[in-house]
Length: 437
Image (cartoon, rainbow, N blue to C red; front, top):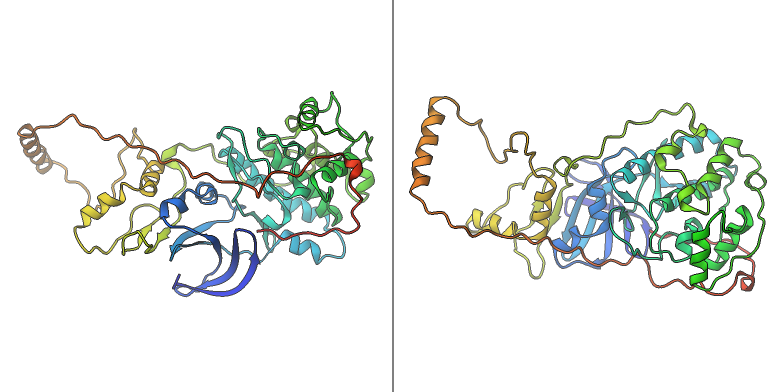
């Protein structure tokens, strides 16, 4: 961390604080996220969801992870710096944003979500505080709760800030999917157009009640699975017809209301996918950034530099993982022995798995300074090697590589307090937003 000068703390939350910093070597302004938890091995750091997901993301509307540094058992994320988050912009506004501004930002976010969902992840914690803005560019950030779509349920029930939490999560479903991101985006879009949260519940029960007030209560036709979830937890939906979104968002266009209505559908299966949203008439005239097809394991984006420094039980030499290969390391003893030791760790094995050379083409050559010989000299070398091999005995022992188990992670702080009927919830007198990193 000696390369960075911390300038100002710009955010503080449950899991860490974020600082604006300057890279002393090149003058670049970066964001440094300092985690509060102690990490006693670099393998533990690389197992974090935020690290694993951001390593696989390479999109202009997803915040970039530049480096991961572990120093004195403290973990730092070095990320690109953005001027502010969307909530900070909203709280300083007197009049709502124009639809052209909302269209520009939301189109970028849906492009990032389409890319992210295509790559097999969904965010699970979309809210204005996690959407970072610099001028006209907006980017997704804070992937601490990101989950792989391919991972098997059950998932943690307590995810996302309550106002943007999908009803299936409020009802403690453990088998939700990327549709939770679509619900959150519907709520965020409405808030951008009105400067007021669409569903500002004071508890899980009150949140459900607020949703019913706007879109009406679900029934057997609109969401039978939701009624089953409510019955399982002995909750009964309030019987409310609901007002129309057009009455809540009086200045919004019919296209905007139609899109938000589809995003905030009770039934997750009826919400459009991110890629489908980009084709909605609300975004007519916007140009999509072409999304790449899902890559093979060998073509995943390169891992950001990850630095691990001395810990209580680690070597005295820092380990640096660069974007393509192991960078040069100072060695106190035999260099090959040290590399062999590193190859046993979960981190190095993970990096190798992400960069397996293609079987069809030539293998990737590393640490080579010249091209291989061709012609007669090469043939003589092959002949010489063949003679040596014929004199050697080869054992049949093979090494079995065991993939390290990912560390157990909890997405929330405890079980939901969602019990009791909504009639027992007094109306909220004042809206208070908690800033959570």
